[in-house]
Amino acid sequence: MRAAVCALLVAAIVTACGEGKGTYYEEEGSIFHTIYHIKYRTNKGPLTDKIAAELQAFDASLNPFNKESILARVNRNEPVEVDDWFVTVFNRAMDVAERSGGVFDVTAAPLINLWGFGYEQKDSVSPAVIDSMLQFVGYRKVRLDGRRVVKDDPRLELSFSAIAKGYACDVVAALLEREGVEDYMVEIGGEVASRGMNARGECWRIGINKPEDDTTGVKNDMQEVVELCGRRGMATSGNYRNFHVRDGKKVAHTIDPRTGYPSQQNILSATIVAPDCMTADAYATAFMAMGLDAACRMAEAVPEIAYYVIYADTSGVHRVKMSPAIQEMIVGKTKNEK
Image 1 (spheres, rainbow, N blue to C red):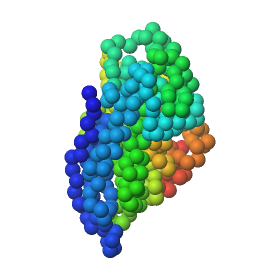
Image 2 (spheres, rainbow, N blue to C red):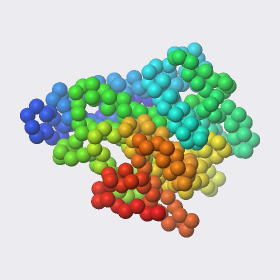
Image 3 (cartoon, helix red, strand yellow):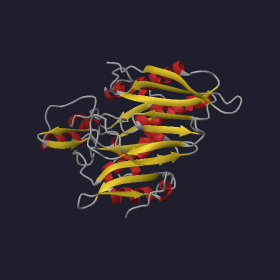
Image 4 (cartoon, helix red, strand yellow):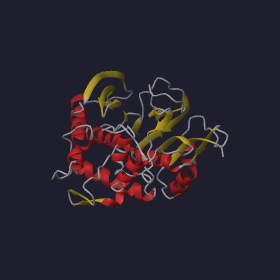
């Protein structure tokens, strides 16, 4: 069934200081089974319809829950030409897959579905079923030939769930900039793209939640607050809100595509700041599946990202590891813990 993009609220929240600067507007809506919040300043009036139309078009391209989307048709092996959005997110996903050694892998859709976190759910999980699926999972088994997706195995399916929300933030941000907006914050399902200043004339401040088991989203205690200046993307991935219990055991939503099983690493939450939200979203997922040491080594080779990681030490105590770049963004300048 098509996932609707629904605009829920538009409100002028404050008039900016300075003649001609415009008014700040705030909007809320839903896409990809999650909520978005957008704040922006413009002198054109609310851009509600344009934002909703852009998100609806994005949904028609990359939403796996939308059975008529380009992505869904690719997964059904229909002869379809992909659009620019598909090409962009596919190429970035392949780049992160290479850099992460295959830990980030958009061909893991069958495994995600198997464990109950995708657009389809299976009734049972067994080593035999996992082994059979691993035969057609692997980012090197798919490529683009112009506007066509070429698969080594027709059973291979793509899932951009670990990168699409971040890219949707970037798409809305690009729309706002085409409309002349210089100050905005776009948040979709916890991922953020921002630029400029908020209504108080400050850089945008985004919280990092404490990693507490809570599938309801009610608990929102802040671990830190990050100040985003300039054009930035920020994403957080964690298993503390997206999990379920199977056979009496907690099953986390981060699946390691190399093994087919949920990741059992020591990272509880990974926050990434990057030049764009798509990149931040992908690397936050990669961090969760890689574990602390491997993720930090990878980050050294990707200087455009900054990270803030909450992990459990060997005694189960929560610790923090952050890059120098993100430490400068922390409001209050929390000290790094080794």
